Length: 135
Length: 135
DNA sequence: CTAAGACCTGACGTTGACGTCAGAGGCAAG
DNA sequence: CTTGCCTCTGACGTCAACGTCAGGTCTTAG
Image 1 (cartoon, helix red, strand yellow):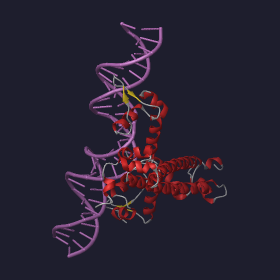
Image 2 (tube, protein in one colour):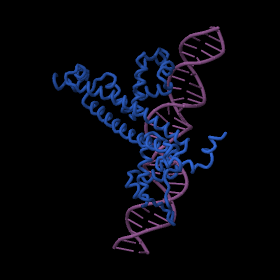
Image 3 (cartoon, rainbow over the protein chains, first blue to last red):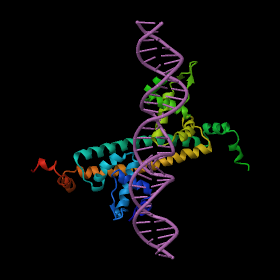
Image 4 (cartoon, chains in turn brown, orange, cyan, yellow):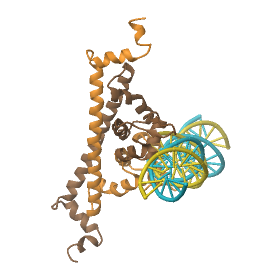
């Protein structure tokens, strides 16, 4: 599997894969001409990397914890790091939930047709809203 | 309330507050000498801005939606944007939850003392761990 | 064999939310 | 008055995760 194939399968760019290697997150066998070759399992690893990036971990942190997550083997130090990151993600989820609930409230209040707020809103809008009924 | 006070109360830097103003997220009355003055309510607004930044919204999007969130008044267009952002946040929460559960599994597996994985881990460690039990 | 792609390294560019610094002016205390 | 802290504008610096480009090599279909 060459780098282009892996990129296609995992949905990230070729550049990103080279970057992951540079950061020590992903290794590749090299052919005699220097081209990278990956096993099938690399796609899973890339997905895992993406998950951790999406959770706000840095390359350095991912490099530290990735072996543990893949092998489920850890030392006391990495276990502490894992727990710390999990707690951070928990807090992040909690805050995101609060934010979503706040947006939800706004949406529900302004959606309800018998809310004074909504009617006020439409009165505030110059023209567009009224025109929707008459083409 | 001057900018330093607001920074202290809301926990963000003075630079950040000026940046928010530059981005149209936060307005201030100006004294005759040009210094910014804020009402008490500004602290809440800053907290709200931080919430939305933390949820991954850009300055531009926040500028668009902040009035709706504060006044609970919206137009059809902004309501659609609000719903879209809420859905994005929902998806983000879902993925973060999956990531956290994955980390949790790793932590629990490697924490359990009668797990072979843990013991294997210690055997795999070259020197440090081994020295504690056998020379 | 050859032309078209895929791949290589190396290096500079991008973006957003600020940090930081310079130089100048404002404001209450002693 | 002046000392010391706060504030102002303007401009450059930062950092991470890539995007993009240049110039060259490799591979493979025809």
